[in-house]
Image (cartoon, rainbow, N blue to C red; front, side, top):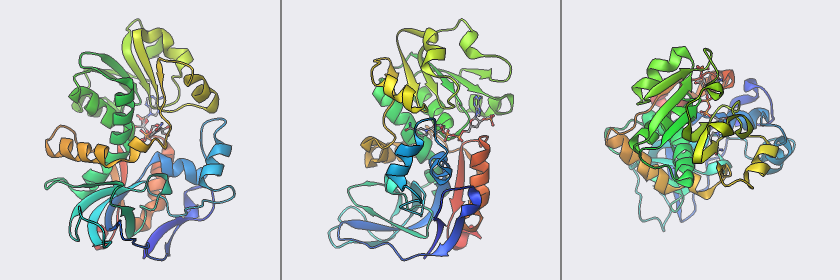
Amino acid sequence: MKAAVCERYGPPEVVVIKDVPMPVVGEHDVLVRVKATAVNIGDARVRAVRVPRGLSIPTRLAMGILRPRNPVFGLDVAGVVEQVGAAVRSFKPGDRVVASRGFKFGGHAEFMAVPESGAIAAIPAGVSDADAVALLFGGVTALLFFDQAKLQAGEHILINGASGAVGVMAVQIAKQRGAEVTGVCSAGNADLVRSLGADHVIDYAAGDFARESVRYDLVMDNVGNAPYARIRHLLKPGGRFLMVIGDLREMLAAALRKDVVSPAPADAAAFSATYYRLLMEMAAAGQIRAVIDRSFPLEEIVEAYRLVDSGHKRGSAVITVGPAAH
Ligand SMILES: NC(=O)c1ccc[n+]([C@@H]2O[C@H](COP(=O)([O-])OP(=O)(O)OC[C@H]3O[C@@H](n4cnc5c(N)ncnc54)[C@H](OP(=O)(O)O)[C@@H]3O)[C@@H](O)[C@H]2O)c1
């Protein structure tokens, strides 16, 4: 099968399309024919080992010291069940599903096998493969942080970086949970962020929200320029800081602070069928929608990496796989 393969760390061009062996399908596994996947910032960070200060050694230890241990990246896919192992009961060939192997990756390929008990959920009728996959990375991140922070209806949350993959889902899910939402984005993305439900929008080029007098129940930093030390005075009593991105020192310090929420990226809940099912249900009910910056065929995945590396994508960069991609 064809796959986008990253055999050494480096710029987007290190990723090449190659023939690789088909995944082995165990008796508890579901083989998915991939129709759509995404290049997420997680793929780009590992590809370039471009991680916050102090995290490059832990990243290499986890992902491969000199080169990626799993050279086919891709956290999540949408597609059709091609084959199931003998013991599989919940899925059958022809079912449309979203799926992930977490940080074992494997999604940037024509096929991916996942355990039936892993992160796999049916795609409802009316939700396209591209939309389904575009909901996953940001949607799971938002759910994970909001659940750990116990976000309540009526609370006011500031979402810094409201137009990226995480931000567009965080804005919508926070609104669904009854929160008041302030999104921080550029002027060019203000209409998008408002259309997703944000009550207030702050243009990051026009002023520094950390210097304003408004106080929040939660502050979520998806950019990395609003660490706890800079925003702690914005938190109301009982307020929480959602550190979606932070360096090693900030992560260690967070472990000692009750008001900082910082789940490990490999948190088991992040790649669970529960969150995938919830996101699919919300999409089918029209409560959330996918935001796709651009779609690229698998053969043009290097372009998708360039978009992600720019730091200015809106929502997701989707990769289409197979004949429909052309
Ligand atoms: N801890 C975890 O479990 C976890 C999980 C997922 C992601 N993350 C981290 O979360 C971060 C966000 O991920 P993502 O997928 O949302 O990234 P992304 O899609 O690449 O974010 C790009 C967006 O950031 C906006 N942006 C850039 N500079 C900004 C600024 N100064 N203020 C406000 N917005 C700004 C850009 O808008 P403009 O073009 O308008 O500038 C663009 O829309 C990443 O650092 C990622 O590593 C952590």
